[in-house]
Length: 285
Image 1: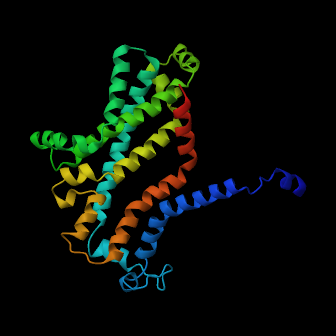
Image 2: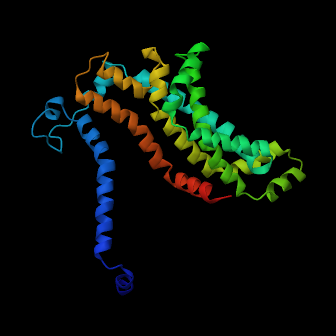
Image 3: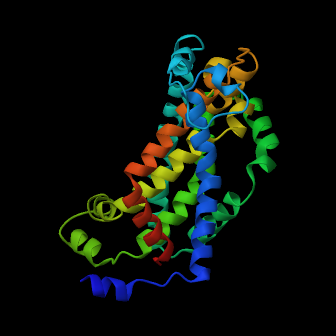
């Protein structure tokens, strides 16, 4: 067996060594800042400010997290982000699944045109529409409103979910749906009982990316929310640096880690469904 393994092992050519070096460099650039945030969040401020800096903490402490949630009361901002992101994700999944199914099963010109226009809207940078959207919402009396911000996230993220799920539904055969309708199901019942269970990987991957985008959004939240108590977590970090007068880098790193950690954990837990859903959604249809 060892002879077979040695025979199938690839030789360490210079090109292959270069590949591994480049992979290590990319990994260091992408993971390095997050690792530095983690290390600074669990070391005292005196050690953070020490020169020359040390990579491994000499003392591990959780005082920054305690101060973040007791002194600066960062918890409500996390709750705001969680509620807005979960509701926006649910809204995108409901609307995108129904719309994508209609686009996949009914070949009408109007439906196709709406789908293409939605994709075009998704390609527009958010900074381009920031001013008109802000004027419209404040003009309608919806400024500084968390429900309006949630609906805005649904509108922004809907095209992504629509096109991922549309490709997913196009890959499903209609025979099972037709059999269910022959047995007495309406089309909507066939969609709920037959199509959606098959589309679970696509729904999970779409939900994860939608939640991540809503959770990480800063531009619209910081512009539309004028009351500090209504801010999501990302813009609230600016409060720590400004209005609250936080001078502790450890507290800021603890806040950053608190925001990043849920998304990282979510990606790790659902990695299998995430890869399967995006892969099939990209090649089907």
